Amino acid sequence: MKLVIAGGGTGGHLFPGIAVAEEFLVRDPANEVLFVGTERGIEARAVPAAGYRLELISAAGIRGKHGLTQFAGIAKMIYGYAQSRKVLKAFRPDLVLGVGGYASLPMVLAARGMRIPRFIHEQNAIPGQTNQLLSRFADKVFITLEESAKYFPKDSTLLTGNPLRRQILDMVESLNSNAAGDESACQSSPRELHLFIFGGSQGAHAINMAMVEALPLLKESRGKLVITHQTGEKDCEEVAGAYRAAGIDARVTPFISDMASEYSKADLIICRAGATTIAEVTACGKACLFIPFPHAVDDHQRKNAEALLKKDACFMLLEQELTGKRLAETITELAADSGKVKRTAELAFGMARLDAASIIVDQMLERQIAP
Image (cartoon, helix red, strand yellow):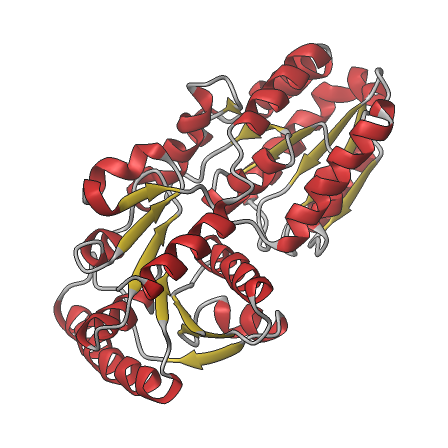
């Protein structure tokens, strides 16, 4: 059986697709997966690195564009539709899954025109315009958060959660196994809070600078904090210098390839509120202080975090409220209240959906074999 996974642009769209691909191949190693994306998206590097085939098509954003830029975007989409039909005719898939991003639009529409079963997955609380449009033509819409259900056709929408890559699932299984065998093995010293700060591959400048301002105010907590801070390349030297000046020992690094390992060691995570990040940290059962990226389309990161916040499953600090003083106060408060951190982590784990990829593959296979 053959599956096309279309979309990407960002890891938030792509990584759930990779998780579905992993599950699809587990079902039958003879199955085949083809990813379709654009040359400017993260998929151009990440898909081949993950060992999957990739076809590139033409696609571009139209929202917010005007004049010649908008016309060029429409022209790219029309050309991308023709390319998508060509890819489908050559690969002859049984199923097509759109995961959001520019490339998913022409591919899912082409699949509809060729009567190939088609599906979409929405990661965020507020769906993008592409998925809202494609939901009219999809056999099934898979959603991560119940808050997005109102944007899609009721009869074809299913709450699945956000698919997690095997690397994360294996780590969660290992954590649970360790906890069952030796509860103390998965806990920090009662006097220490393991803090993991990250902002994606490029880092998060606002979070980095707020932490630089916070460090002089955290000197009294030096013995209570064990810190790993992923900064991105641009801010790494400045942030590392700030830790040294404050006399706070920390691992400061521009990039982390093994996120699963860092998740496993953390008691509290400070990060943005992208859908994939939320899915991973809740699956790991970690307490998080989310600082949503304020310029995300439709402010969807804030909505993502609020879905957990209303169930006391995270902490949140908006970037417009973010100062070194406020961040230091929050870290100090949580370092002194391990019970609160633990309760929040437990509630976060209660919201995790570890079987999302399995559910999605089940649903697609059922539709494919249905008469």
